[in-house]
Image 1 (cartoon, rainbow, N blue to C red):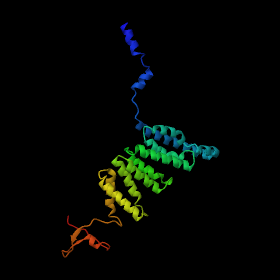
Image 2: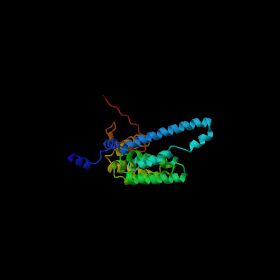
Image 3: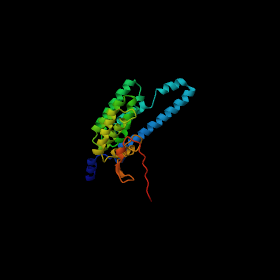
Image 4: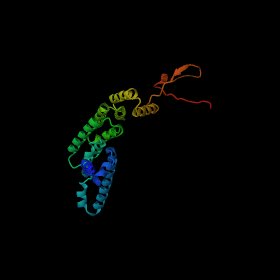
Length: 254
């Protein structure tokens, strides 16, 4: 009688399926993303192969298939995953233009996704490496000033110094092109100064410092000044000859 009461109190035993679910480890959401991306890439490859084959045998079917890009089938899955892994939003940002619709709709979707990424995921470790590159690739949909504004916003929004430094380094790089104006160069110099002081310990700042150190020995660069003596013992500085042609002959005995 006592045994019967104990069994009733415990309730019915879980089924085999329920027991398996309880004992199975939960899959980390961050582990799902790479697999889903790979699945999408394989689907795109298969779609392209079929499209290529149909273009030789049935152009009408090929034209229909061309409008059925796999992105439409995968979009809901990435959208669901974005609730737990912000990298899914990056995929949506990169691939969203392949959805059916107009250019203005694609631009609107991309702007919404960027706003969500900056608001929710600016401090994620992957944001430092992946987000600046993704923003740069959106230039064809917006313009250069838009990209710069978003990089600046990422640097300000992130609570991670590594991410902020990466965004600032990317922004400085975009301000120092061949056709850069004096104002752009001055802004880049100010950003580089921030990297060297506020973010000196970050990997992005160290990489920028190393790059700048090499730039001074390139054409148009300004090398480090130094003091020496000529054959008569008269001291001089390299900067004394700025604007003139100087040939340096380094020699020694080993």
